[in-house]
Length: 403
Image: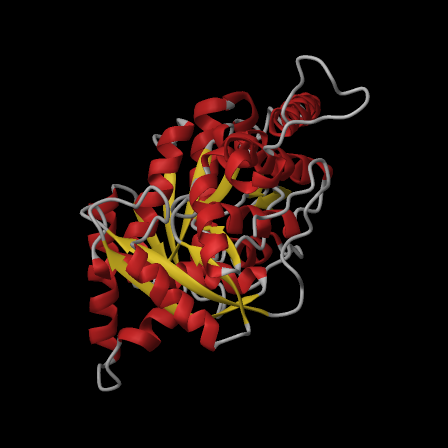
């Protein structure tokens, strides 16, 4: 029961009705059991964002993935028994990328849809893309993801064509399909180049203004913070990748104008094709002057999330830009970590130690705020203003001297 793909037709995401899933992770020498459980928590949230409820999770310790089934045969049988007992299960989601061969074998044995982390993320992106740019970027990433997996996904197309008009050297259907997808990829790349040129023209029109970009892991509150800082109405939701399209707003604090940009959130194991396809969107980050790296300080793995974002920023060549770490959701951090008997002085001391420790560990100035309660948002505005003024004096002194 191989997956069916419609070449050239845009995916609209998983069915809107609730689906039920089993999620699977692999414990290897590179990933501890604790890390895998944390990754599966995130995978479960990804599934929920796509419209699927997780009913069970499975892990297995292996030195390396099995070439045919990714996990061991015994674990495959264990999952199959569970699915047979729970008819509502419609898919199994793996936390790592699968080959086309692995997907085909697993679907044949488990008789349900097999999805890996990358295809799930691509599905969410496809369902949330609104503009022509985002839709083109996502479709390109889908085609690039699909191309090397055709043989495993389309096993029914491996037969040789025949009949009137099809004689001669011939061409297998799978080769035809590869050619169709390559042509589609070529067209999408040309479309994106045109969009990139238009975006570059728009950015050039903003050359004489300092640009501040909000970056960070997905679902840390960037869009909510954007709304507070700009008094605008940017879409914000408690789901992963609520924002795909870059939003730019002109802001002025104390008569000092600058541009504030909200960008797509990062995530662990973000599909490489997606990063490549979203290059034009990420150019807003590359061309920014100041980065506001927003972090969910209440998340138990916020340190890992910071490192994930910093790695991606390093790949984009922007890690050395002036950066302010904005630790959001401090109200939630207190709720989860403070003892009810701790007095205000003790709380303040803990928070100061937390901030200083984070600054020392990650090498950037940090602030603790809450976009939900608006705590320290005014102080954040003041610090942004100081940073923007400093950037104007360094980059556009002829503008700064008029203030």
